[in-house]
Image (cartoon, rainbow, N blue to C red; front, top):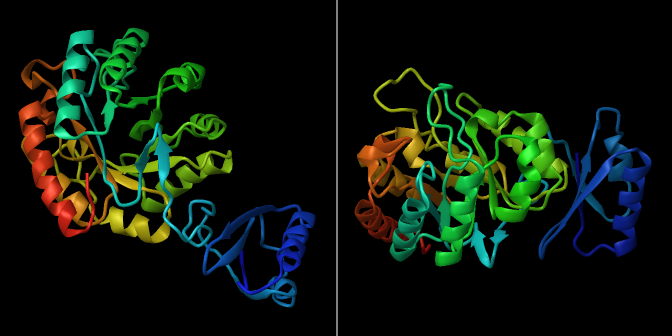
Length: 337
């Protein structure tokens, strides 16, 4: 439930509303802008008498919220959120470009790729240290050693690093060494993990689950915000359909839908969405055209010999061309890289 206050009302009117909400055993979520003042009610509001709030001083109207997510909702937070990461931002006018290999394979590999993607215009470096794989016999990542190589590449390039977290026991390590904690598609509904990253204030990049609806995706993000961490970035990375030509099916329509429903920034991962390197560029352009706040691209300096997902990885040369094309699309929409 949302209480919309009159913008010309007195501060004591809003205080009275908040006190009443707290007396009911509910939580308060307040948003104040130039042309709005909203007080959200979070908790079980089924027995709340909306009429009693409508009669209070300074109240303009009361809105019932049907969706299970509240803090994620644009009704609770009308303006777009911009997530700050080491002086950079995700959301807003500038597109965030996250690039790097699926897996960290060696210090020289990740450092070379980091230098190349930065040269092409990327603002963040991605790389897998702990890898969730469908088969237990596939390469699982270099783990702590891989994280050390990522830290070295960050020292060389100054690019903030994005690394996937798979278990709660590694959270303390990630809080110390990682700039953006990624929660992968397979862990989108790992609620213990979501609650844990909700307790930190590190930016969290949450990927959409393989078969998750948009509502399930946003409700998963709600777990993180409910813990107090508002630094959440959503990532559409393709969903599982009956189509077998591509690895997944990029749900390009999810971007404008989520932007309408939620204030959180949305980026797109065309690499995992397609699983085919030559499709990454056109899908990246489409993502920017429909309003995505950024891209996550897999780049490898030797895709044919990559230990993981080489078929969907673009070379540094192709990444540079992709960036040039994306820059053209961004300019049309008054955005920049």
